[in-house]
Image (cartoon, rainbow, N blue to C red; front, side, top):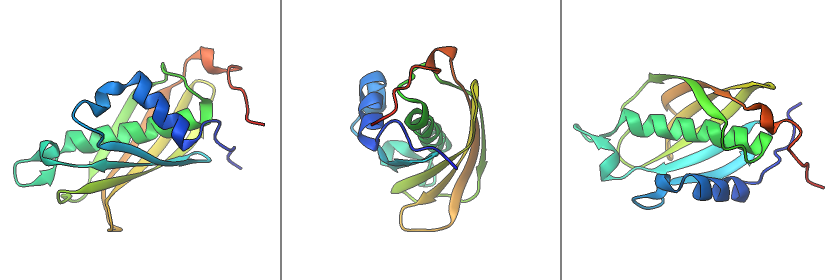
Length: 152
């Protein structure tokens, strides 16, 4: 059974704001909506700068959202470890998303001592069909083990 997160949604958001302020350079478009046991949900309010020719949300914007959602899910489980880094991401773009908000539902498949593996499904807000499916692996530094203080 998955363990409860050691960080709340607000704590993960505050960590991202503090450690990665560049994600909000042009305004707050990425939002951590929820974290849970081995899960996270994030939102991208895709605007004009996230579109590619043809009026669809660009691949790089979707890739960023997937990577951030996986990072948020991992942080929620292991705590504020800034040096957990992406080692692999694979994407399947399934449909062209219309302009607007995208939702990322992330699930950690395996959380080990050194690696975390997860998957992310992206949908257009208000729709059920996936527009992108991603899998990713993160390397977790040795320093995180034993550094987590469980909530009381």
